[in-house]
Image (cartoon, rainbow, N blue to C red; front, side, top):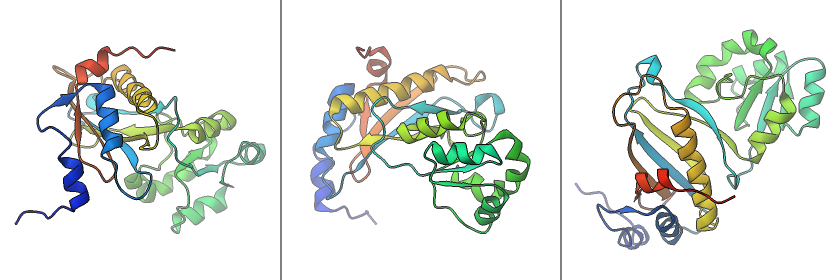
Length: 237
């Protein structure tokens, strides 16, 4: 049975040429044009890589800092103790605590988007692995969320730094802005993401690393981006 699509989606889909890989800026313009929902849709990138994450040397987990931000309000929680609790509060963390916060999270509290912990609290945070791991919220040194430099970490995540990883099929899903951004700002963010994925190529990745990249708004159709054109692109400072 074929899936019924709304008239709004069908009209948006009709603007995308099937089988065409668009030039990067043209793809951003098309993403904006096909974002026709009644709210400010999120811009999403879906990158298929030539990796098999079941091998540890082919896993990709890192962070990207978007030069134009993400357009989202990010709620940051911090688990720390002593003076670090005040440092986190002063730096603008939304939720701060020590052992009591660990217990609250263990019991189901999840009113945050990023969880940062100081290294000395990690042995206690370990018990949250089962609750936070599947949601991608578990603090990790690789993700920049286990650190003593709380002021810098909080400020970077609030400004648009984002952690991402390849899923078990080797695909990276990342939101990189809002449909209300200019096409140029979206492109600058997408280029920052591509550079980050390139720089963090897993040591075990063999053969063709980049397979495909598609972008879309959260309620819009997929648009293929010419990956070679994106990799060759130079963004002027």
